[in-house]
Length: 463
Image 1 (cartoon, one colour):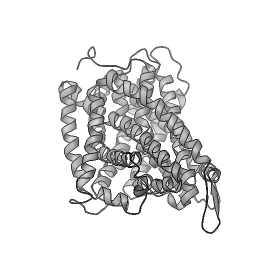
Image 2 (cartoon, rainbow, N blue to C red):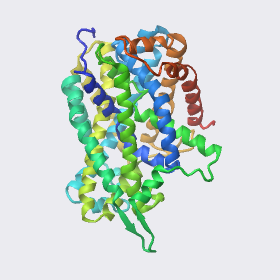
Image 3 (cartoon, rainbow, N blue to C red):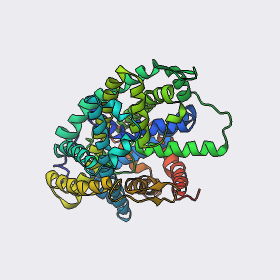
Image 4 (cartoon, rainbow, N blue to C red):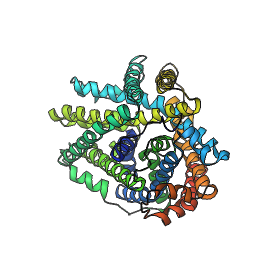
């Protein structure tokens, strides 16, 4: 595609909201609260904020700048910076290609629970075995996955202005409003156990925000550091081609530094609010043991919490899953867009043809993912010790291996081959001030690569 024909965001606000929409997804809403509860609340949050302002800022700035400088999708952008590094684009495009089908499958689960709470079946959804019964059903998960995928594709077919930007301008303010509302409500909750123990939302807030350093070992601190760093990949949508694709739609007169700062702030605030929304409420009704990992938090623990709320639980549950559905759609749109834009740039195809190709692929693999819980069920032990099936394997390959690898190779390309000035000059091309220039250089050349190497070693069970 020629640069003249390339679509672009209507302005910096559209870009910020679209990028924030990509960042604020299922990773923020279920993974962040779980990790915060697991890793000593306040300590995890403190480390996360520091990393967001350093590690996350570095990768986010780099990818957006690469996108705008080259006006290319992730598949072809890296080769424009240096031909020897075009392979990064291939890996970066593989990440959203792997993620899209299983993300839409999970998005389908969200739609199922949204429908349950909308039709008064929230009590049934809170029963033991309900979630397992649903995902092991032969047809229902496939149907919900297809509905979610069609919603995603409809936005991508609409293009940058009429699709992505328009959706983000509407949904992101609503999403923020819903998150704030549920967060405030969770702090007002109170519950008395059978033994007379009383827990309140404010007690849960203390568990969430106040670090408890008692008994913390060096190993515990290191695990928290790695968890927070891994979460950042999800939170700011880096190392998966998305920010390169979105950066390519940013006009040259946009203040890149200011826009990236806004994305950082928006995403961090929403991540913290997601924890504030979930941790206190789960703590009130289930204690810290209710904060289990992955799907069980959102689809098992939280429905039980909503059930324990009585009459208000049905409405709160509906609002919660509506909010999660909004977040999931804005994120899945960005994942699909990264693949579609790559096909458009690499093969010079129209948006419609590219989107159809991606949609057909995603449906086929999405069906296989859904069948992974019934007809195609098996158990496989991953290098990090976790027992997995199809969805978990795809998640592990994309998030634990390819994403850190893309980030590491990007640091080598920009930090040592093309040099940091490549990004700095792009970010300040209109005379903008780059206040964290010194920090950026140190992070891209030394700190980020070292941290990512440790993360990769951990993924392979070596460290």
